[in-house]
Length: 622
Image 1 (cartoon, helix red, strand yellow):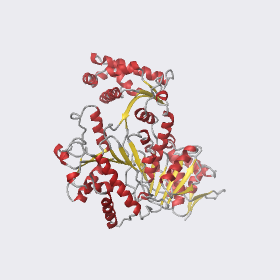
Image 2 (cartoon, rainbow, N blue to C red):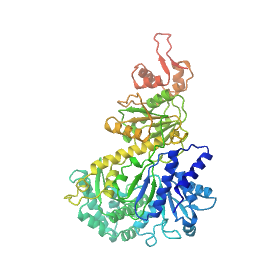
Image 3 (cartoon, one colour):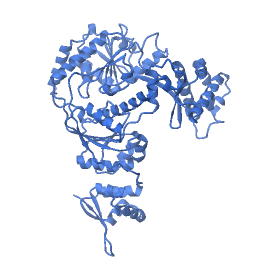
Image 4 (tube, helix red, strand yellow):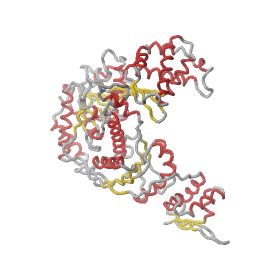
């Protein structure tokens, strides 16, 4: 058993009040529920999971450290806590030990060198998501000691009784290979003289032929591989193949590899492909998918073994459609009363934009200055602005010269769970996250029940709801990532007993149509009380080419002090040729040009004069 829920809630509330933090009756009831859920999961030894959907900022991670510190060692039962990062795993162990005033918890991960005895003896073990995923993977491949699962089964009394995963955990494990991946391996194999590699050479040739047919539409895309190919795949002994492949040396590749290819890296890539094929064989039911002109062979499986259960702490669980695909194992639990209010958060919405990864990566340098200047006009001189964008757009945003000045940037895939920007008062969502199109199909193949009446190899015939489920998965992924991005700034922190926060501005570009409307509706539902305002920002209809010379002039203009400045002085400051400068000035003569709008956004007006003694100049507003 764990601590009494009522006593646990009182202890947590007392601790927060001592620290000057607000506590409400609704929070107390939530903490009682929290302890009750963990206690029941501890007593329940099956493969089911309770997913606690508590809002960001409520302190679910802090509550977990107090729960473990309050549990008596004699009936502790062993707890495994799984955090997203190494730093979080370390902090969890440190917090538990500090609160308990004794060494009760231990962090174990790639940066630690802890002996097995210490792990066996500790009551609470704190590890990372990747550590647990690797332990499950090793178990499935038979690489563990006997039937044990590392971290779970190495406690002194057997299997740890409670597993708590902090933040969403991958529910699906996938393996995939593109035509290029298999082609590299095939090229090496067909030039190898080792007799033990002939069978896998023939297999890669057949796989490439199948993928070519899918690429040229001679075969149906998104289909299971034929029984013949799966049989060939299953008959290969990959341990023997890997052993034979070790006989291939970098020098053996010199005669047929391109001159710009590193033979050692080529061999490393080949070994990785062989390992991936062995996992596809283990899972079975491999399938092809086509995205654009790229054909992929994949196989996927549930990431968590059927007999492992526990509790997941996931603030966005109610929006995550993956849980709905496992109704028998995943139960989402939400608090009965409202814990947060966002009535001091303003959500500025601009619709009708292209927000995809490809477009914004290509056009960030052109689109961002106008957007930044608009944010600056609405927010003033704010130095705590976080821009969430695609990774390949970060440099263009950081290098742009705008009225907003410097700002912090973070990209999707490297933002969830981080608190680096918790003091920020403004967040700009510049583009929506990108989910690889094959991921929803991999999730469906792993979690959806397969139709018993399918007469073809097509995935749509075998998974009748695949299309609708895939679209829901993509939409929910967008919502979750945007919510995570918004909650990196100060609105994540509660400042009063009602769950309110400090004033925060959120600017978001969204696509037109139903998808954009649904995204905003989901954000409003997740952030009760949020104030929604229209952001009048004209969508860019075409790309305006900004030359290096123009950027130099813009930089010079942004540095001008209030008052009037001769055009010739600006050109000298920018250090550009007379021809390039003339082109820039010509753009300014067209009031509706993108360049003219950008300059006006700086508070700069171009004054053109004619005549022999005329002097053109720029006027900078105070």
